[in-house]
Image 1 (cartoon, rainbow, N blue to C red):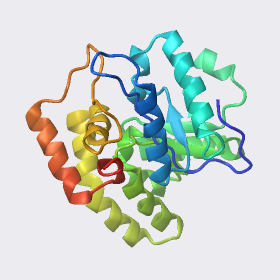
Image 2: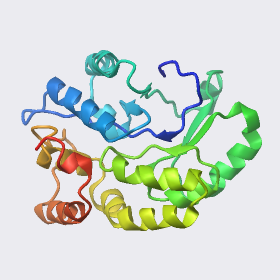
Image 3: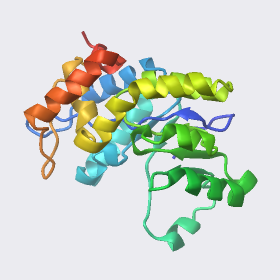
Image 4: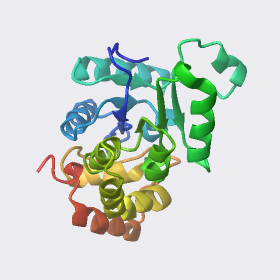
Length: 240
């Protein structure tokens, strides 16, 4: 579900994390702060209830609560995408309104090129994902935007703006600067990275995840914070 928008969606649509208390309950006030922080990051829209939102660990009632909270709190500030997906091609083909793609597979750039060529005007927005770890190649392949985590969209944004304006060298330089942190997030931390940074940055009170997920190892956490401190993403200082 997407809030109505006059123009095709493009740009940065990060995945909102779902904060929990140390006891494992939904932190609804923390969720509001997450959304406010993301808007201050300069995002073009917000995705909720995706895998990086730990949707697979939420009950149906919790999902309903979060949909209502997020849509009402964000209002008309930015578009909101509520994740709905299905493994079956047959089921997915029965949804005629689908005009956007998020591709995060090995060889994403080639997949994007094939889909853009096959879909033509039927595709309003081909996006990449997976924490933007292949962003430059995907933009070159025709991606209209990216769906990363909420860890550093404010630092990813210049990459898109430079690339869109035809300043590829500047885009590549901006991307090279942040790639070590993106790689560390993608390969070492997963969804826990955003929660850790947001907890240290005062956005949320706890970086708790639900079982069977486990907290980051202290050494992994230290490595993440070391890389983030060099770049100072907004999430690391928003609540201080």
